[in-house]
Image 1 (cartoon, protein in one colour):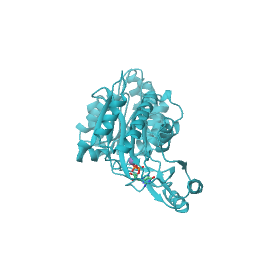
Image 2 (image 1 turned 45 degrees about the horizontal axis):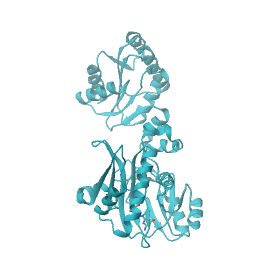
Image 3 (image 1 turned 90 degrees about the horizontal axis):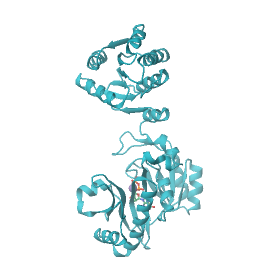
Image 4 (image 1 turned 30 degrees about the vertical axis):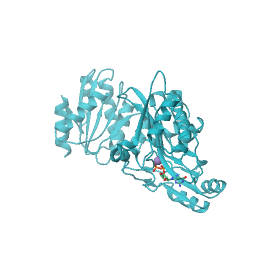
Length: 383
Ligand code: GDP
Ligand code: MN
């Protein structure tokens, strides 16, 4: 789970990483107060979980508090769009930070190198721009250093790596210290990414994390309370955000056929069958095991929130999930929602016959005996 920049900076501060002073604001009045307390020279930064905020117009430097406050007013509620995130994200908070003088911008990160089975530290003198660009244009400008899971990493190895990255001598000692802090923070907070870009070198000789990105391994979140507020707005798509609030696995794909299935495998097969039948999946929901009528209704609602959906395929194989309960859910959804698009249902497995019997009563539904038949029927009816 990605943390916001301000949360990332708070976390890193606890490990002794130098960051610019600053506070979050969600309105111009607070931004004014914070900017004044910082002496008026500030940077206002949109707190959205996407890269390239600078280019997207979400980062701006000011030399007086009033303008910083006005910009905050313009930014809050605005949708920022970047190359990395074409759907964009709405700004809810900004970070008002002291403006630091930057002489040079470096890049530092710690992440997991799955191929090596080790964490890896990445260091580059070419910070500021996206690291993918650096990797493409000057691959030699990135130095990688693995952290042994048993022994960790020795100070001399870090010193050598920093020197190999051609970081100027005066900055080297501070960078070694910062890297040690990042590695410790990475391990102790179960992070799967820590990235400092830019890692700023100031004219008066200080190394400061001007930007910070921390992502925590979601499977370890139970060990790290207090980041819950990030979760909801971390979904980039409003429908995905709503699904996440309801605790339902939903993915948007962009075609026209909505798909509801139980279990990831069956959902994937359904996507393939719809493609094979000449259709394009719009989105899918996994109702999960033991799906209740209520849950099915919720899934149907989510699927139909996407206005591009022209047909709905429901593919259920009853195991723990009982076919008759799913059928009740589908009927309840039809009662609750005015469904104007064709719906094809394939029901098999536990209590499928009872389920199909229940569905016979509805004239809006088309039954199908197999997944292939269901996919072909929905494509015929929808397009
Ligand atoms: P990102 O575009 O989402 O990665 O946002 P960043 O926080 O990295 O900001 C983008 C750029 O704004 C940085 O590369 C810096 O050049 C500039 N910037 C950000 N904060 C400061 C600051 O305090 N002082 C100065 N001079 N530039 C800053
Ligand atoms: Mn950055």
